[in-house]
Image (cartoon, rainbow, N blue to C red; front, side, top):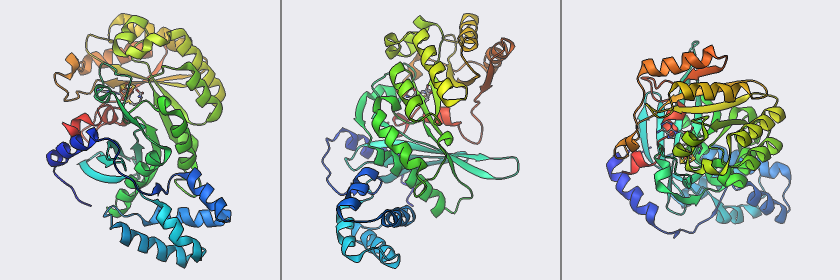
Length: 392
Ligand SMILES: C[S@@+](CC[C@H](N)C(=O)[O-])C[C@H]1O[C@@H](n2cnc3c(N)ncnc32)[C@H](O)[C@@H]1O
Ligand code: SF4
């Protein structure tokens, strides 16, 4: 696993990001529909597909060999598992791994990865380490769903890039696979237990790919996580898509990035909020809560002097208490982004954050502050400033 200096990678990453799609290559092993179709065309049975997934999941090393060596390793493993020999050359010429780790920034609390897609563009994924009181270690993987983001929220580094591209379901799954391999090859203790869509991009703006990737995350032959271990974080600009997710994947957790329960203030932070009223948003949340049988989870970024006033806390409490079922609020202190002047925003003082938290609790709302710890940032914070920090 090579740790290249951030700076050198950074300029290369930026150069590549601007290139148009130039690379051609095999389809991804994680393109489940393509693999399934290929299997059907070649008269393969379900257990053959299981063999492919088994080999794919255990073969890829972070010290990526050449494509030729890679094919050799896969071929040997497939043979050993009695995969129909005649199909092997065709499988390996049509499919492969398409994403590559190019940059790793480690911290005690995990690591942030710059990942290059087959088209040369970059996304970032974050591995977040949690240690329980009994010493057990587990990881959350924060994945990107888009290259950049069209929503341009006023506090978000990813938003300044605009939308550069959509990820395929396979590219989302390859991020998880790469981080899983990293844990394995570094001999780190613990396993990946959660996946959060809190990286670059707005997942509901790439709904089909995100939905299909959830099939892979929960697939027994792939990552095998329970749907309730997956969280889709959304800025909530489409009530219809929140409801669709509730219908199609009710067990998946939804986290709504609210950031203000005053419409005018929310629109200043999230320009796309003009297209949806708080009432519609609340209604979509209630629909989701009903379908999932669980409560609603809200993300609330705290920015000094912007959305941390008494009026804001009162409006937030009112919004939460109107909801059907329980509401859990994650208060996220604004994370400076290194982008210019931090968009003119500052993190409130710890006292001010605690004060907001106390008022919310006193109003009867369940809330937690996601403090940045010395061991690294919480999933929300770490994922909130992706790409620009490592590209610039
Ligand atoms: C990057 S977004 C991706 C998911 C989705 N687009 C959304 O907005 O929920 C994930 C979370 O990071 C938060 N975030 C963005 N910029 C941040 C910053 N500078 N400090 C802390 N959190 C931030 C967002 O508000 C959101 O809750
Ligand atoms: S906070 Fe989410 S929706 Fe807003 S710009 Fe960033 S990634 Fe996009």
